[in-house]
Image (cartoon, rainbow, N blue to C red):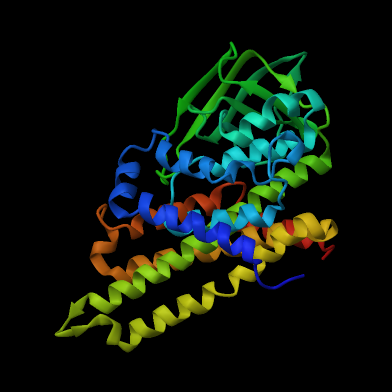
Length: 357
């Protein structure tokens, strides 16, 4: 394994970062947060123009055929900016079609997903659980509900996780499908509930336990990458504030207690990078280790992101708790990452079980 990114990967990451520096700076970010149900079309279109949705799509279907690590480093960059947008859900929809779709389904949908002409989402959560779905088909129809579906109101197609490791595809125009927005904490990624009443869906015929596991691992790795980016930014924001804020006649960054707090945050975050890199690398190169590495990355990085974001809010003092201060956006994003697809404790148990401990 190479322990550094390639020149091509660094160029991809830098291109996205420069785009976000211009299009997701503080004023624009606050505007997106104030209108959480709107699709951030300028950011999403920019990612489309850079080929991001096409990264993991096989070349035969109009994609770039790259490995998951390339998408993960983009997720890190988006996390650093707290950039709103549907990349996570779109990527899970894409991955499910790659792994479980028929040739005909792939030929129809993957070129549209790669080009951004169609927006995808992914529905996994049911009441009380994020995966291990119980929802099942009755013939070709679906009855029941799914919760916490990102950007469902804007998606053209949604992949639904079913019982027994199945997947089905539903188009937004399908009769019997209703979509209800949810109240959310992280306003950079709006959620909705889906309700199915004799809703016609299309089964993905190559669904399997292996495909379901890989889609889950994709989600965990992208969440871990986003968490590393967000935690890194939270530290940078806390350090910048400590260099400018004055109390008792001096810069607060000179206070020893705050110096120690910031140093501990940095020590917490820097080792996280290698954990998500290895998980993304293992997805394509070490399949026997992939599930455990993905579980460890999700558990550790999402938990530490939440811890660091809380510390960063405290480092800002009272202003850190206000709507006008951007650090609150990162705390709420950390809460989303911590919860989405299962809490850290759940994935630590999975990692232990996979290691036969």
